[in-house]
Amino acid sequence: MSSFQPPRLLRSPHTQSILASTLPRKLRVMPRARPMLEASEHMVLDCGDGVRLLGELARQPGESRGLVTLIHGWEGSSRSTYMLSAGSALYNAGYDLFRLNLRDHGPSHHLNPELFNSTRLPEVIGAIKAIQNKLPRERQYLAGYSLGGNFALRVAAKAPEHGIHLDRVVGVCPALNPVKTMKALEQGWWLYEKYFVRKWKRSLKRKLDHYPELGYRDDLLKLNSLREMNAFFVPRYTEFPDAETYLMAYAIIGDALSELQVPSHIITSSDDPMIPAEDLAQLAQSENLTVEQTPYGGHCGFVNNFKLDSWVDGRLLQLFDEV
Image (cartoon, rainbow, N blue to C red; front, side, top):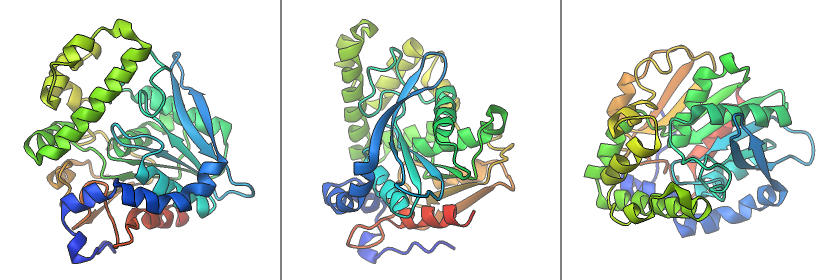
């Protein structure tokens, strides 16, 4: 049973999902994050095949308890509130911290000419290898939120064959079946889809500032839903013929995690409005995979009290400390 039991007034999944990224919560987080931010340096990683990804490294001034790499969710960044919150908790507890930006997230649109898509696992694997080569700590951990959690678990599944050492991997509300997630966004509360359409379009416009030859500026003006955007971009800018084929290509249900050799842990909520909990039953059974399902929490929320503290921050510390 999970220890996460928020006050009754904070139990709505929408309250949890929205509070996690509000300005009041960021204002709450920033003082705690200051030591980590002051220690952080931007780092461009060579991920192989000419791909470069951007991240922020905060080293401990003294002895380190290990290195934690964090990956944000779709259209988030290394500076997302939940990344600063978790990162500062881990850094202040003595861990080195690397907050990785996926391609075309954060201030990284200029680094690679091709667009981001969620099947670009090889470059994330390359990033993790590059991070570990730069900081060869005895203890190595990886955690991600939402799409970042999906990436983290896919990295865990491939880690041994790529020579990556990980002591534990944690996915917080990881995308399980992206087809169902997309339907949940399209058919659920309109605010969620509007939020992601706005952020995705803003990112795509920023990409055009650096690579106008991508040539979709006029078409982008006509696209007003996730369905329309996927239908336009997937067949033109990925190797997949249609949106459903593309979305299922990075699903982690079925056999995707069946060969896990890295101890991995999923934290998710029963009331997540974006990641249907029913898909947990479709995960492969593995002695190296543990699922922790809370009754409340929304999508990557887990706001513990009216001070807007995060329960997940403390849970990550517990999970990494016990290894």
